Image (tube, rainbow, N blue to C red; front, side, top):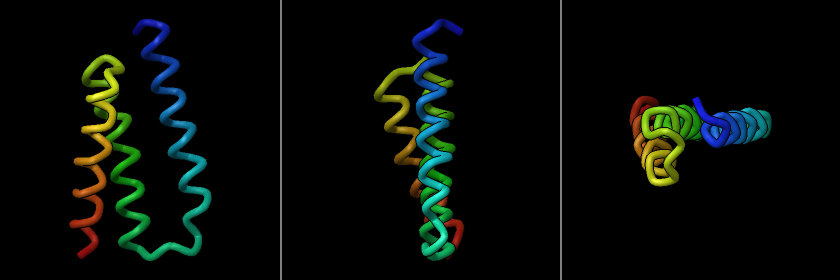
Length: 71
C-alpha cells in the first residue's frame, strides 16, 4: 500500500471513530446509517486504491445499507 492510501485510510478511520463518539443521542437507525457510511467509505477507499470517487461511493452505499438494516 502506498503512502497516499495509508494516509487516506487513516484519515477516514479517524473521522469514523470521532463521528461515532458523538452518537450517544442518535436513534438506532441513525447510528446504523453512520456506521454503514463509515465502513463503506473505508471499504471503498481500500478497494479503489484511495480513489475519492470510490470512497464517496462506498460511503453512500454503506449509509443506505445501514439505514435499511435497521428498519
